Image (cartoon, rainbow, N blue to C red; front, side, top):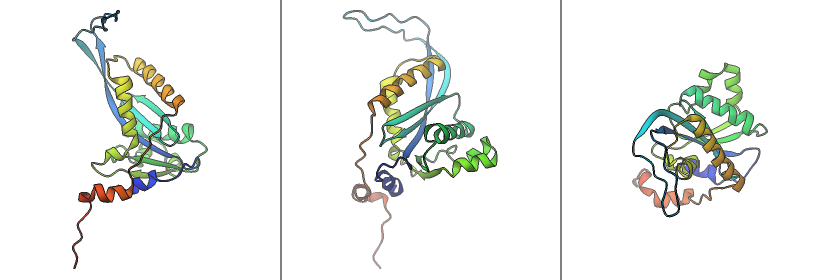
Length: 209
């Protein structure tokens, strides 16, 4: 926990940007009947019946100090999907960074070894050398600011029926553009000193000898 909190205290450095990564799934739901549009004094009416159309996965990369995020919609959440997101992060989002300081949880696919399952060894090693990884502790996913941003996405964009992956990509891209244009950031205030007081119960008890 303190490792991640110390990362969040670092000043902004374009050569070593702090980026948080997380993911979540989205159930795709089709309407079985056309919704009745809203009219003055009457909200939109949607039939309670629906048709499930599988799921999609959303990878969120979020740079909190710059107010920049990117959401990638994939069919699955495999190690290869994760590796592709990492290559996009390194080569497309931050090609000029010396090292990307990456904060993420310990999900079984979120391992640097996943890169070797997607790419040739030399390519996997090239990507790994561009990363400085910090994992959130078990049961400490709240420390990952990408999780906070996914919560905002769910509230502002995904809290409704979306039936097709292409529609999901369009809606998420529009949300992403609005948030990036506004440079929405996270003002993280929780520090290591706070943790040692407020989360004292999580620390081992040392008995005087």
